[in-house]
Image 1: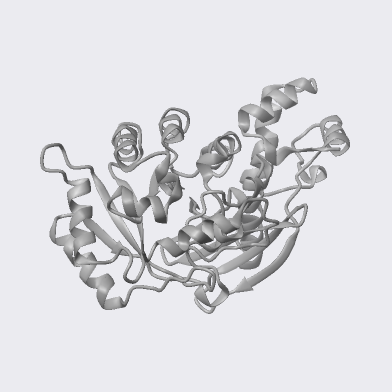
Image 2: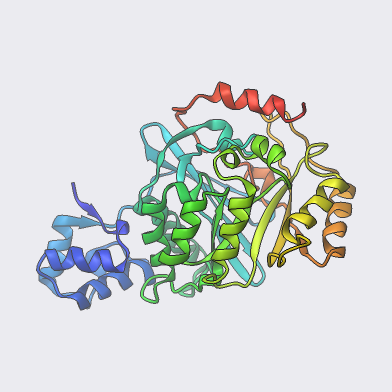
Length: 369
């Protein structure tokens, strides 16, 4: 089977090329053709030696993921479903804005965390994606959008690892993908414009700060361990005190001077004034330094299996006001692509569930207890 060159960051591609008897600068040229220029046909890589192009045609390929479906939203959002084999599919979403183009990328087929307000978690977990499968989403979206828009300029300026899966539970494949996004010979993105979202895998937050610090977003969703144990089951392993300490330590290496906390607004579950005040106390404790952060309040996007409802706009506004009055920067995420099920928490793909979904459904019922 041919080697998929999307599986390598630049260091990996250099090592692979050297194993084939090629010099380092050839790997840099090849890397630029693939990621900077979006070319997959080796015969078009005109500054490579003919002998190298023939070797590449024999041993390597730039293999994108097969597209299952594409849906275009009325607001310009695009959602692709990609086939990743063995009966599994993942979803990737492009969100255009006036000053940026953001791609929401998946890291796993399904998700093992099992948050009851997320339709991906309701599908269960199948497997981790490879580095090539993570990067193939960006490579395909960038090359496709440039062709459709008739431009040679970059269309995607931001990447958020907020698609299907928990990125930090697929750490070995994630880091080379991040390094390729950041590499000047690859996509040349700023560390501030690449965001990893995590539900709180504390040891991997610490490792990421050393290996590839990018912007960090933490799926918080509750102000105390009792409620968060139900909403984010991973909290039972890494409770809030450990998570917030990891966030504080990450800030010393982060490209931004704050942590973003994501908070899904669930009617009657986590959206009261008392919850808001508890959040203030959590990040601004009386006897220690406040944690530099901002809150991103996310209107819940309902799906039938959840049994949960979206907080009213009035409740979201009142909740945001309490955080803002305490001096915490607070935004309410604008829902994009909900008409094509591309909004936050709606990505479900098509997953052959290999986990015990009954246990997670039992936890969902307990949320309202």
